[in-house]
Image (cartoon, rainbow, N blue to C red):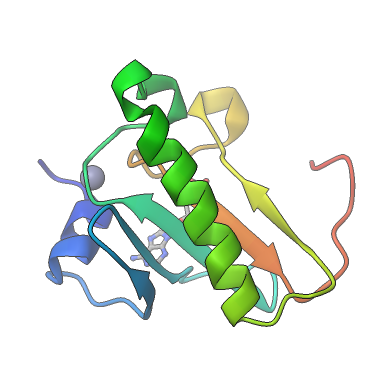
Length: 112
Ligand code: AMP
Ligand code: ZN
């Protein structure tokens, strides 16, 4: 499968890794939208949140936990935002499920 994030997880495309465990992998976004911008992805290829099924429930919870753990390690004590762009209307451009962890500045609401 020609998936950039799968290749990043396999080490075939370089990335700045900030977290890894048996289920997940996290790395710095190449085009950061905030002082801290990390992508948290499952090692398993899942195309999007919409493609996740019932068997993926624990994995989804694990990725959310991992994002909170990274936020703690990055010292984001003032807060942060987790974003999961999903599908065309959601603005998803990379077809491997990913959580954006954004922090280090005040966020706006609603998002554009
Ligand atoms: P989305 O628009 O939600 O699908 O987000 C995709 C994100 O992946 C964007 O923020 C991109 O900057 C980021 N991205 C794309 N290619 C790479 C890469 N090779 N390494 C790190 N981040 C990437
Ligand atoms: Zn993939």
